[in-house]
Image (cartoon, rainbow, N blue to C red):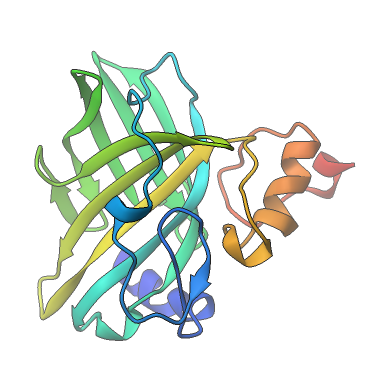
Length: 210
């Protein structure tokens, strides 16, 4: 069901373009910009002493087989990080799969200042210690959390994916098309009204932003 929802809803957010890695600019280039060439300076990975709520976007790239047509698709997403039983619990959801359905859930542990995945799930796939590469960086707008992974489908093909997340309330740099899709219409009005991160993206109560 999760995969079906993803396949049915994704078509609204591509248009044949893709966002680049850090500056979040849409480009017609068929090859994703290397993360290493655009990444801001590395800093210590966030622990529970850091933010609980995060907002940003995620994308598919290097798609193949049954997923080839979804190259460059991207979605707004939110994340919650909480301390739980000696580890950090990370829950991710996006504009098509709200929090009560979920896109990914993982247990994280800090090792020498770097967050590592212990276990969890992404869609219908289990996550293990080698499944994710997690990095934290900072730039002129503050902290940026970057998560990379790979999805291997049961049938043919698969895709690589990455998440870009900033603490809820952060400003994102650049012009309108360099930000998450709901940044201007949904995110900023909620932030300016002091509303906590909702459990569904793109929806809000009018009373929340008055």
